[in-house]
Image (cartoon, rainbow, N blue to C red; front, side, top):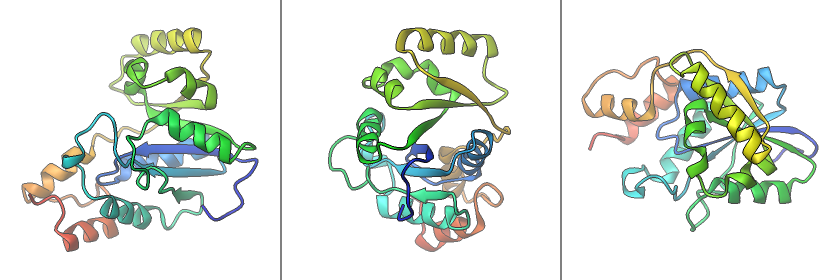
Length: 207
């Protein structure tokens, strides 16, 4: 993030990215296009609150794969702020720090629409809503009526700004990719080829 990043519309993509795949990249690209974002910052988690850290690949591997995957897109950047943080990484803390560091920016937090149903279990959801606009990536499998009710509920309770982010259906997950590698199955066309080569060279996900 060495470029001038003041007064811009910035999308925030968080996650373990273990590994990053085309689903992540399509959501980020669609967000940038649909909401005219200047940049999208990928922020891989360090110590996520909802997952056992022992099951997550070393941050170096995850960050290397991210660098490789986004290197061809000038709008995409990698932030190491969470992987360099020794504390448990909560979204509200990261967003608060970003708003303090870049007060002239407008941040858009990109998340899966499914996560909206769990949003109130997150730490300090009211701060997340106060610091950012939420872009909810919607896919065909989501119950439309239930989603709309949840969006209305969150808007009323937290004065949240929530917008639907329409994305192509891409039924793949990092978990599925890891399982396929472990089982010796092909992961071609699920993620960038240079990321696939990196996984093979580093012998990731075999155990």
